[in-house]
Image 1 (cartoon, rainbow, N blue to C red):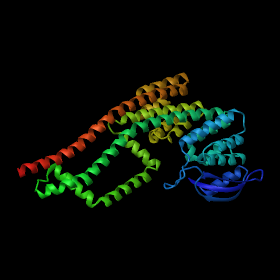
Image 2: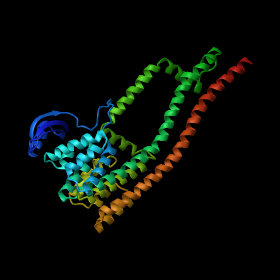
Image 3: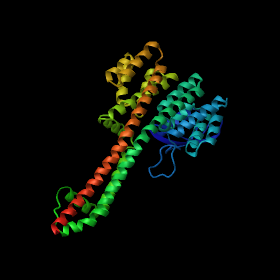
Image 4: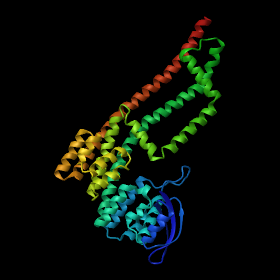
Length: 400
């Protein structure tokens, strides 16, 4: 898919510009023509508000901006404004990063396109789940209700992500602080004693020898080490900008002892919460499973096989059970939902239960990891200091 900028005349003869996502410029031009536009010019480009260059200083619109935009748009639509006026009003109130997207949506809507089709031009920003639900809502005439429901679901998901992020920040800070202390110790403190140890012919074996060798290497090759670390960091940033790389990393983390349980809880929460939102807003089960495969944390490969099983006539619970995708309790809850015809409501309750369980486990993990990291740092730095002091004491014994 490419991002295509266009200039065209709408059905009323007004000049309009915007961006759309499509397979090619020709495909975008054809879609505009079907919507009643006279295409004047097309060119490949990046839509306003989407992912910007890695070195761009302008903040691109993000997930929180989209959530706020959807909530505000739902509020304005409930007040009775037409869609084009609602988009214009929201664009005047939002931050510049999402306001440009809102203005582009308005241009497409006034040109005859539906809101879902207009959002398709910013597919990476809104996501297939939002676009699918908006398309269903437009057909059912419940756009304001669906937008409010989607915004609430996204807000819950963002709170969960924030909980996970905050649980990881403290251990990550401790790790960085420990690395900085270790590097400072090796390049500033150890050289003060290295000359004395070598002058007196102290044995440089074991821990002392390793510490002295590491110190010499960092001092001699410090610039090369720094450049290598910077290059590695940049490469990782570029690699993990790709969804495939992030999915692969999540798959690897899911196999690590201690993290597999957290990943399973996160996956269950994402799946059940997304399923509840999609089904509750009129999306069919097969389409909901297809959309859920694109959500972060939902493990798309396994969901694809679940979706294939459902399309072949299997019950949802049967298809999930064959893939061992959800824990037994969640599976039994969904079975109850299928049998009672309340799958959306029971999926929501299941998601709330596992979200609370995930939050509690993260809090316990943070309470353990923080003190453990502090003890580990103290042992590491203390061990280095003791090794150097032991070597100095051995020199004093030789002199005496």
